[in-house]
Amino acid sequence: MTTSRPAATLAGGARGVEVYTRVTLYLFVLLEPFLFLYVVAALSSRDAVPSVPQALVLVALVAVHTGCCLVTVHRGFDGPLLRGNRPGGVVAALVASAVVLVVVAFVLLPGYAGGGLREDPRSALIAVCGAATVGALAVAVPLGRLALLGLVVPLVVAAARLVSGEPAAVVPLTLGTYVFVVFWAGTLRMSMWIVEVVRALDEAREVAARLAVAEERLRISRDMHDVVGRALSAVAVKAELAAALARRGDPRGADQMDDVRTLAQDSLREVRGVVAGYRAADLVTELDGARSVLHAAGTAVRVVGDVPDLAARQVEALAWVVREAVTNIVRHSAATECRIDLEPGEREMVLRVSNDGARTGVDGVAGLGGGSGLAGLRERLAAVGGTLDVAADGDRFVVTARLPAPAGVAA
Image (cartoon, rainbow, N blue to C red; front, top):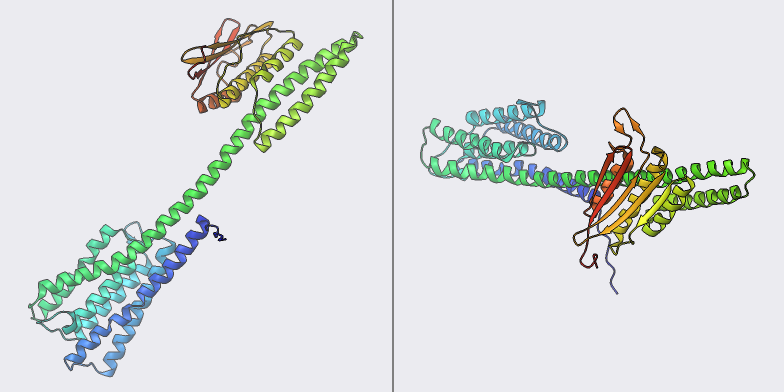
């Protein structure tokens, strides 16, 4: 029996990739001193070994330049190397050390014609120094700019040949130097690009997590509004009715208080379901609840049509429409009658809730502009391909929900 190890999370993978790439690039930069052995080999082949002081100067400058390359790569991982069009202090130090090294190479090292970098110590030093410099900048400079910046190195090599009066093999030496520089800088740039992609994926994962949390909060707030709003409206109406009956000594007041207790218990269960994410509204239950609540509020109710044979999510969306519409009738109207129509059709299923007694305000019928409840209904219906319309005609208020009907609903 074999067991599989769980895959690493993206965050852990991002950190691992960055650490691995950092170490790899640091080691790549440290190749620079070893590549200067080409210079030593070229000098040895020509019996032109510099004196001890000259050699110490060259070694010191190579160490300083390599250190500047390491610091530049390190800083490039954590932030931009350029502030607008102005180079930072690290970049200035890197360029200055490279320029000093090239100038010293012109002064202390001879140049030879008739061969490549192995026969020309001056050109070899300039090529290695230039490639390391451009490569160090590659961690924070786009590849297009690197390609243009890399042209400086072969041009300096060609100028060194021409100044020394040795124009032989300038063109192939220049092309070879440019390929070497582009390879060096391109390797570092591609490695850094991988790090940037992984960082972007990690950030996208964090954004997706935050969006998921925000969406869940929106769902809970929407559901709590629907559940608690309806429940409190029903409790208020039934409690008022029970108080009126109790004042008259009518024993039915106790029955109404039993209904209040049942409503409170059902609402508590639904609130727990909202938090757990397992609650689903039922259209038949909501229609029965609408009759009970509206009758208690003194509103005559008429339900026309049968519960449609739709998908579970569509039926649940219609149930929420009934719940929110009835809650609004109790809270925002003085309705004496309400009608709920279920109209199946060949292309769409229509649920219409209409009532009279809509209260008017400065802007017309209250609720016509929509609120958080109606906005939540629109979101629910849109998730199953439906729409929600509200309209007012005098003191009448109509809520209409439309859903696409699957084949066979009309029958």
